[in-house]
Amino acid sequence: MAEVRINRQRCKSCRLCIVWCPKKNLKIDETLNDAGVFPAVVIDAASCTGCGMCFAMCPDSCIEIKID
Image (cartoon, rainbow, N blue to C red; front, side, top):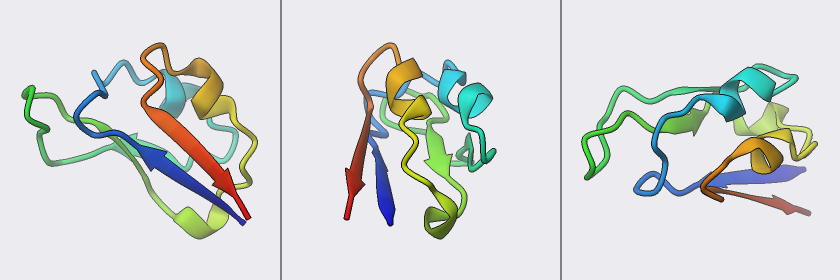
């Protein structure tokens, strides 16, 4: 099982992770971060396959994937 961690404070809401997620398991959060941006969040942690597309596409290295 994979665990995706998104650094809410560094995310600039470019949406590249959302576009490239093959499971469509990411969305924009409804809560602003400290910079006044709506960051990306995981919809359902259990359905993440750990493919790494979100990690690879994030231009600011806001995403970490831990695979058990």
